[in-house]
Length: 187
Image (cartoon, rainbow, N blue to C red; front, side, top):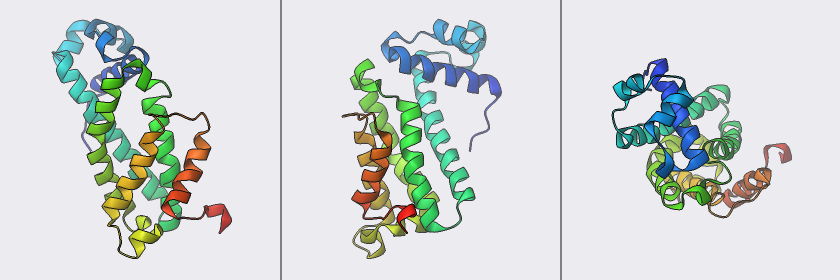
């Protein structure tokens, strides 16, 4: 994980809130500085251009996703419990970072963000969940690799933001069913 000073973290978090609320086309460095509670020169010291800020935001989101997965793995040493917790984490993380209305705010940016994050998310899920992905019968049988299993889950979870449903719990159930995995409570 990258060590980043608190000021840069505050700026990135403020920029993400701003993009989610207004879309990237309406993102201004002045508005981000105000949202972050820093001066414009401070923001420019960290992110001198909007392009650099947007790139840093993508990297920051991927880093936050990976950190959350690591915390989940540390809390769930049992592969089945880790897999189940990861499904809920996927939905929760995407809900919190993408929001229900991100596609309508700026479809091109939202779709590009999903596309840019897919590869790193697949890598994180496959690496961190490891044998937890063996809960998927087709992975366990060797018909899919762990990376392919991770990609399948992520693509289904990402679809929630293309055709949203207010019931995110149903998405978790759908992910389990699609993966061929029983609910932990059903075991």
